[in-house]
Length: 197
Ligand SMILES: Cc1cc2nc3c(=O)[nH]c(=O)nc-3n(C[C@H](O)[C@H](O)[C@H](O)COP(=O)(O)O)c2cc1C
Image (tube, rainbow, N blue to C red):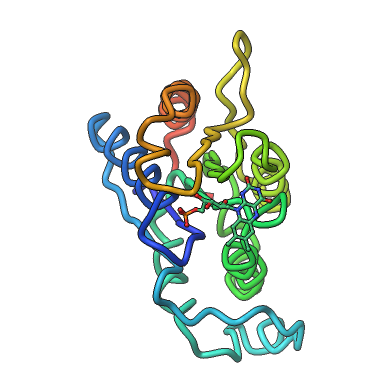
């Protein structure tokens, strides 16, 4: 299963682009699942270390809808809006709260394949840094980070929404970067087709 995580509190550009990415993966024959932070209550990690002792998170909020989804993940697509030149606080909270998943199984994302989508209101608003923040999360968890590849390179799918759904739909360059990244993502998934650690 390919798990898409949207880090936007709105049903706008980020969720739309992630939906398109998951459709492309379905066309390749993969099952997909989208988890969005929209409408969810996901608190920041408290670093209380309860998870290290008890193998579960002390914060019984909507992260408990996401934790079970990691079980069947082959590939993961994290999509974030750009807030202040980087990832949204919402997606960062998700990243930090996976500490509890790692406390249960340190390899919960190891050997999976990961790609990133960043959507900014500005053309150069911090998309690359946001993608690198997501890539760093993948590296830390042993996930294989995938880019759009060399030649017209990109680190992942990056979009210019001009703050609207209409804007992101019109961003041809963004969709070009998405298609390139999805192509490589599919290639890596074929090469490393594992649900096992
Ligand atoms: C708090 C906040 C900070 C933002 N900071 C940036 C920024 O630094 N760079 C940028 O390009 N866009 C920035 N934006 C604009 C959003 O990235 C843009 O509207 C994007 O399309 C939001 O994604 P969504 O439509 O999926 O919600 C910011 C928006 C908010 C709410």
